[in-house]
Length: 187
Image (cartoon, rainbow, N blue to C red):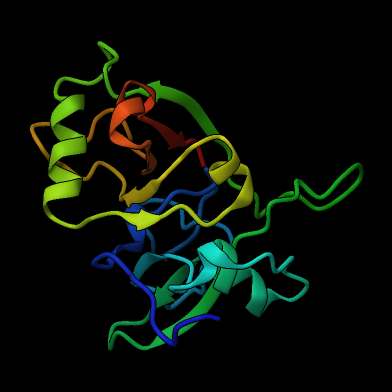
């Protein structure tokens, strides 16, 4: 079953959040899809502990948040304003895709696009900044651990320029570490 806890990296300013490039009064950078007007912080919420061992096919928003993860928006008092659960569907033909995020990649950690990619793996593992891969599609491809890096977040000798909109880091078991990669959020 599921544990009653999960992980959320430290929240970041909404001005750094990934999202479409539209003008919104009161924001220095456009807010992401579905961000409430009074949101000042956002964070990625990983799937709940125990989600890795389930075959639950999420049918509701709550189940999608539990199994797939979500973006969480907070006000100035760090109160939760909105939880945007991840859906793995692009919506199909004719669907409203205004709140979809797109990603580029994979970019291998050994790529010249990253200045310290191999150190990124070491740092994430040493600091315990990894979460078990929960999505069957990732597990089926051998992904062992996942982590979200916020937009431009520096870590392990990387200055964050390679992921201006944030990225997901995918780590494989040690014997397949050459496959470690990131997918960058395009908005």
